[in-house]
Image 1 (cartoon, rainbow, N blue to C red):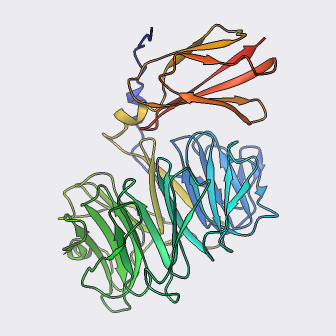
Image 2 (spheres, rainbow, N blue to C red):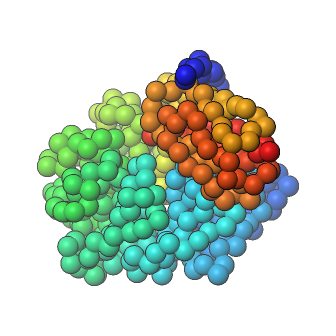
Image 3 (cartoon, rainbow, N blue to C red):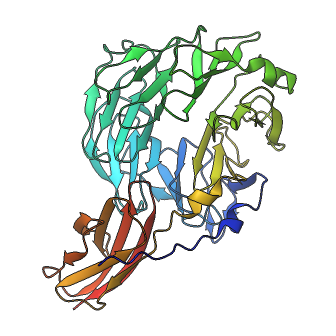
Amino acid sequence: MKKFLLPILLAGSFMKGQTWAPIFTPGTPTGTTTISQTSLNDFSFYNNNLGIVSLGYVYHLTTDGGATWSHWKDFSPYPQNKAVFYLNATDIVTGTGNGRIYKSTDNGNTFTQKAVPVSDVMALDFKGNFGVLVDNYCKASYSSDGGENWTVISNTVLCGNLSAMKHVNVVDANTTYICGNNTNFFKTTNGCVNWSPVITGYTGNYTGLNFIDANTGFVTIYSGSPNAARLLKTTDGGSTWSNLTPALVAAGSNTTSTFGAVYAIDANTIYVGVDGGKIMVSTDGGATFTTDFTHTSCTSCPFSKLKYAGGVLFASHSSGGTTSKVFKKTISGVGINEVAKELIFSIYPNPAQDFLMIEHNTKESGKVKIYSTDGKLVKEADLNTEKINISFLNAGVYIVKTETESGSFGYRKFVKE
């Protein structure tokens, strides 16, 4: 019989610390390691602790929210990685400059090539195991199994082979938005089978994209100066758009500069990177904005990426030099649900011989995965399986990972006799 334990919530720790803090600075000592690279292609965090940054041919990993980073790891013989995504607590998917997809199932220690679905990966995004990537020649591709296999969407379905696609936002397994240069903006509502153009009424290159659900979303677009950078909002899936730029201008933003990334925590709380190395925020749906952060050591560094994980908002820029490139901020009033990321569970008997029993604190569906100490997946079962057969395993120590569909997870060790 399942026993449901009460989860331990440490909400207070998520409600503290409301300022932006630098967590990744190439060229400076970090803990016991030295980070020497000076560019940054992409980053991804699974929660507020597990993260990866890609600096082209090398990458760094953190398990403590950026307090310390691993010494650089070489992607070689893999080519330049332009996009990374922390899929779950053990799996990372990357996309390269020559269109290849690599995946790690051991927290970035090793990567295995999975496919060559496009020519030049520019961005990728997942929601659960469903992922979509876009490339520099207006192709796209999607995966329904966590990046193991990919189905190519021909560029003739989208915008030919001349315009770069640079942004992708997977809302759910049905709805995805992609956009890029030359006003190219598309959506699918049936899992990438069919695509339709999204018309905002403005021409130019899209510089940021974020939807909080299938209908409500934001984009930034730049079409040359003067007065060319704009922040737009839709509440009907892209059929109509409102221009939020005047509120940014009133708050001190210069529309002759390119706006960068945009991320909405909810329909009211919107963050956007603007000129002067600033991040601005609205708490009233875009009616007004205030300056939330200014990168004083590099006011010419535009924030091109804003991402959210584990109650924390992360921001990065890719400008050269050794100024900080990744910052983070704990978001007030958001972290309560995120703290429940830890799935409390127990296993018995331990040591075990033939069967392992699982007791957990959730009614959600999910998976139980058993790994050997070298990171190899040796057994997988549904989370609601009470009795798991382990009789075939060799004697030794194993790690049990539980994960729900909403992203809660936990780990335990056991000994197989």
